[in-house]
Image (cartoon, rainbow, N blue to C red; front, side, top):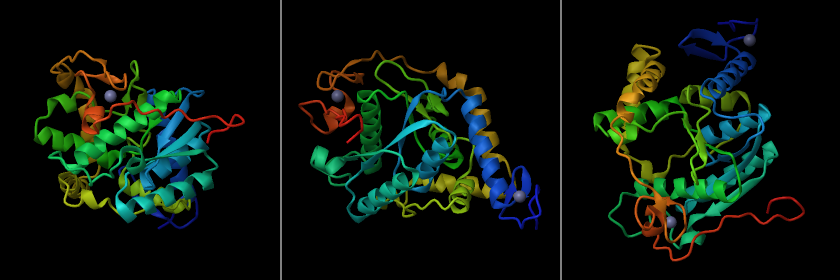
Length: 308
Ligand SMILES: [Zn+2]
Ligand SMILES: [Zn+2]
């Protein structure tokens, strides 16, 4: 088969809308979609400083690559989770990706910072749950401490669809009230954006391949058997039978989100007495979990106007 727009052989068959594309025209299609997502959901203004959270994996690597190509002012943050060899490889990939892009990379190592890696803490809390808490706190505080306007993450359409799906299956209305491509900034919460919101995992893999972007393809050892992976499988089966299932599900959710917002319990936020960040209790869940007595300070010291 040939590309829909030129004479070259097709590189990918898109199912929704159905078309065959060569690497160049697929790249154009992919980048146009991200631009449209940024405009449609008002994710970014042209002069805003963006912190891209890079894990070493494909989604965040592609996010950084495209934002840079579109001319945004970006820097990257890698959070080394301290999960043995998996984390070492992840950090190496993040470093290579940022070098190739010519973008500053900041690295925070959980084990050095907090004494234990993810998976090494004795707690009843599931590993993925406190890992998520830890990452979210660190990237928000890092962005806040260093004056970034937005934090970009690599969540793609498959991630979003399966997250919404699983929260519907459990009727977690509190979570369902708060999902979307944009979480506006508020006080010490820096704005969060998801530029890959309308692109499937398959498209992200194809984009990385077409543009020579290398990435760490191993799954986190703790994610093994996670239920979100099962929900992804179900949605992939549906998508195969009925192309467009995922995007229509997610867009439908965004249209109906107000139903869940109406159920949202208003929590009065105060300042954590340890770190000063927003918290529902006296001490925030991050400082409580890691038993901090002093706040973490992520301010990057400037040497000759350049970051560390
Ligand atoms: Zn073409
Ligand atoms: Zn705190």
